[in-house]
Image (cartoon, rainbow, N blue to C red; front, side, top):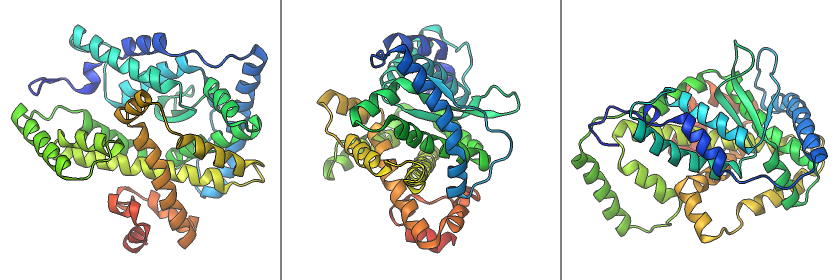
Length: 352
C-alpha cells in the first residue's frame, strides 16, 4: 500500500476471494467416521449451552436475553465466517476498489486464514450477525480441530469439549455483559487500518530507528520482535490503538483461561489433566518453518497473552475477589495499562 493511496485495509482486500482461496488451501480435518463427527457436533452444541451457567456464576457477569446456540463448523466454514467478520471489522466493502490489488491481498489473507484454520478450536466473534436479527455476535466451535487435539492429548473427549466451551463462552459473556467492548475494539481497529497519509520518508525513518535500537538491544527474534517491527512503521495514534488491542486481548484471554480452571472438577472432572497436557502442547517445540509462520502471524504473541493475562487475573482475583475485579469492565479507563499487566498491584492501586 502506498502512502498516497486512499485505500484502507478493509477496502483493499477482496474478502470473498480471500475466503475462496483460504477454503481451497485449508488442510482436511482428521479422519473421522460419520458417527464421530455427529457425536462431536452434538456434544459441542450441548456443552456450549451447559457452560453458560457456571461461567456466569464464576464471573459474576450478567447477560440479558436468550442465548443463541453455538455454531459448530468445519475449517472451511470457519474461514468463510472469519473473512466476513474481518470485512466488517475493517469497514470493507463487498467490491473493493482496485481489482488486482484486492485479489492479491485477498490471496495473501486467504493463505493466512487457511494456516490458522487448522489450529483454532473456537472463537467468539462479537462482530458477526447471528440468526436473530436483533443480536450481534456468534460463538463458533471448530469441531475437526477439537477432535484432533483431544486425540493428541489423549484426554476424555466429553471433558475436553466442555473445557473448550468454558473458554469460548466466557468470551461471549464478556462481550454481551459489557457491550462497550465491541465499540472500543472497532474504534481501535479503525485507527489501525486507516491510511494516515504519511510519506515514505517518515515511515522509513521510524523503521531505521527501530533497526538501530534492535541491533543494540537483546533480541528474542520472536513475537515481541514482530510486534516491534509493526509498531515501527505505525503513526503514534496507530501505536496507541495497537497497545489498546494488545492489552484488551491479554485481559480477555487471561480472564477466559482463569474461568476455565476456576469452574473446577465438579463440572470438568479431569480438568487438572487437561490443563497440564494442554499447556505442554502449547509450549512444545515447533519445526523451524512453523515457528517462523507463527511469529509472523502473531500466534506466539497470542500464547503470551494467555500466560500473562491469566497471571494478571489470578493475582487480582486472589487479592480482592472476583466482584471487585469486575471493576475492570466499567469502561476504557479501568482497563489495565500495559505496565499494569506485568504488575497487577499497580492496577489495584490505581483503580481500586
